[in-house]
Image (cartoon, rainbow, N blue to C red; front, side, top):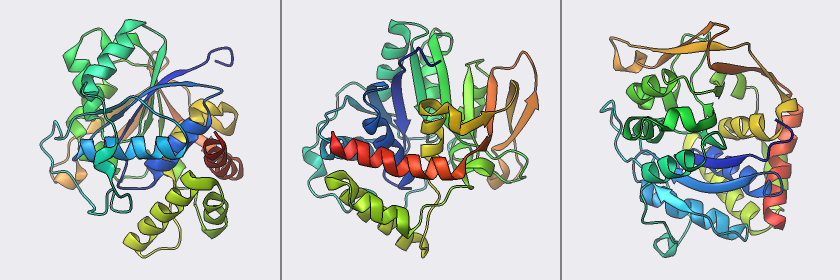
Length: 299
């Protein structure tokens, strides 16, 4: 994979948990190593999310192709909305967003040159499932899918999978080469005051992220957060930081209680298409998140 310059589409529910914004910053800071083709947004007010993505890109001196994706879940589950999304960013309505819907953009970009595009999906999997259902070439045309989602061996459900379990079942049954970072791994990383100070010093983008991180801390009455989504991005950008499982399959369990729907189970299988991130270097990952924001701010 070292000889390959990834061509990436980033699918995100950016604006609620601040980790999506940190993940986007890592991608913006890695422009020498990847081609970020587009950002697609999912879950709830996707237009607001798309405008916010463009705002972050502008703070890093970039302009992106940003597409608003699916707003409602396939499962019918109600969207969880924190209420603070975009509230620290004035004038978001002025940010440009493509008229092409997110799912259309995903299908177009992935099928135009089969086997060349990686999709990083760090929100509910509604957009990806919709693309699979829209065009039967989509699943077979993806080079690889990188997910933040699920919790393996913990007996608990995780937000992204639980929020649209029907979509997750569609995606994880499609045979796409997939790497997943689940809660049991991402929760080993914590962002605290030291990292926050370094991010704040990293120019306009760092200042904005600092405010958003503080807002997220205040929402939960905490002095730290878990940057789940950057772990998935770093699995692609810095594979030496993570350890992957052998291949297998992932099933998404049905629960009688709605809160139980979305329980993920990994079964090793040499013919499977999915690998889990099973270990990582916490210090290297934490340092890389800060360094990625700093790199994005310098561009």
